[in-house]
Length: 164
Image (cartoon, rainbow, N blue to C red):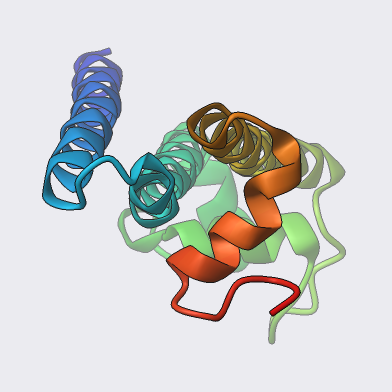
């Protein structure tokens, strides 16, 4: 229970810190770049995606560790090793039935791990989608219309304007 509490407090603090840093970096980029909020969006939002990806992956790894701890003795018996030496990789091997042990695989463990991976992938994909929509919306608001976005992006990246 204490490990779970510490993990979720860490998760919450990292999430809040990443959102706060994203906001601060956005404000700083706008101040440093003048009124060019679109360029700030293009430089800051990928950092937010990276932090969100890290948090999603870290949460998945934490869940795998909890699962390993819960099934430590069963995994050790399946692999014929000491329970103290069971790793998360051993959990993956038993679940998938891979490796030198020629295991058949454990469908229950595999299904649970697959659920964790799907949740992680959905979290990353939905964050990327939200960041993309946010970037388009902020650029559209700063430019006054969606029609000017391609020209803005090419100018922000140092290319000549579209159609020149």
